[in-house]
Length: 76
Image (tube, rainbow, N blue to C red; front, top):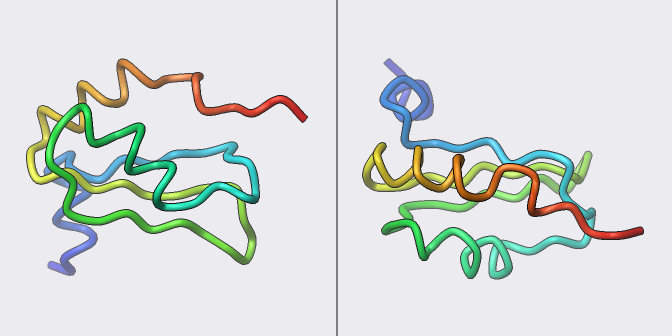
């Protein structure tokens, strides 16, 4: 099994959508690190507007999803 598939299967990788195109991995780290230890952040650039944040523990990923749902939208 591919590592990315394994992370998705075990619930550690969180999709973050509808991001401002100027969002950075540093901004996402500031938001998500309060929920647990992060192992990776990947921000799409072409096309922009989404990212994947991977936690070391799936429980932290679940907590982050519940706590941040809908709060990452910037006013345009």
